[in-house]
Image 1: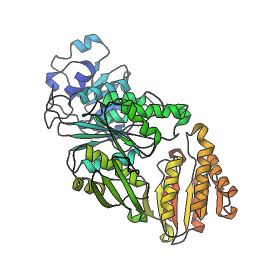
Image 2: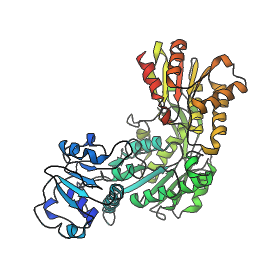
Image 3: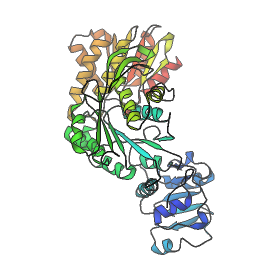
Image 4: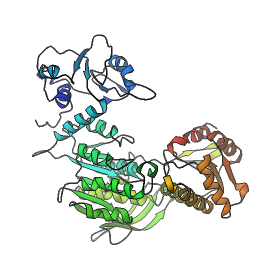
Length: 488
């Protein structure tokens, strides 16, 4: 069954996707959104109850219904008044689904909420295939830069196409299927971020999403504690490229400057499109100039064309993000005017943002996450800015055997950039100790255990011309530092 241009997911689609039975009486009942948090439920919502260590979604089914949800997918019995329960694990229930008289709200009992979410997303994604369907899916992976690339690529594509993108960092076995359930017949492009901890996970995401275009940023030893080795990380990222259809439908957009990514060209029959800083790439850039908080300026080369570009991305390293987004636009048939307008689009929200700090200082808030390469990139931006430079750097987690080397590399770069270094946590201590060992005066390096100590130091030292970079892994909760300084 094909979808019309305005079609969105309905309750009948949900039942068909989970049971292979279509219920005519529910055919016109639309699903407004699909959610995991009952607080996000709204009239017409589909609620998935997931068991969890801290909270169990099954305890919030009644709350979801009170907010207007019309159906809940559960994997154990729940006691909800005035709700009809359909046990989709029971063959007798499934065989009777085409009967009339089904009432709302519905509780749909399944064996696994997660597997049902993925099953439904696969079913719904497959509706948008075949003759007359113009939907194309762009998948993005890599160790660093996935979210910024996703945001910027979507901003570019929106200049011509009706585009759906994964929200926030919905890049795993839960977030990606949730995004696909919001597909409608009006969408022409979908941009999906794909994350992983180990081999097999991106392959699973690709089986659900069926991408036409695969973009790989760079591969670094991030999450190596879980993957076990750098080689397994490379293999896991390569799964996106292996999943692409052959040319001309499939396109692999690969970083020519990163050797492991460049070699992924051998893993696909898709068309390979290289980007980078080398003239050997299909799309390349040179004469890169960092303009501090005003963005970057560079020249972009493609075939016989040369473009002088200025865009509001922070840091020289952001040129690779711009190249990736531009490459997506090019392989999707867009012209340069559309692409450049997209690169400059204010809605292309990026992770690192500048916010006012105490006494007129500037805070570079890059607290979402951290790896050695992304932290060094942030330090490179800090170097471009005027004023006294503070680097507030915390633990970088899940680096495995690369942990000490990665923190030492950051410490050596911080030594070259920062006037004051505040290192937080046991691993952050490696950053500070490395900087001292290689020549940074010890009275300019502060080794602290937590965010509160860092705030106390900054509150005493920061003046009006200072620039403060705050960065660490998500678990370090270093946004607390930014929030405290903004309130000063």
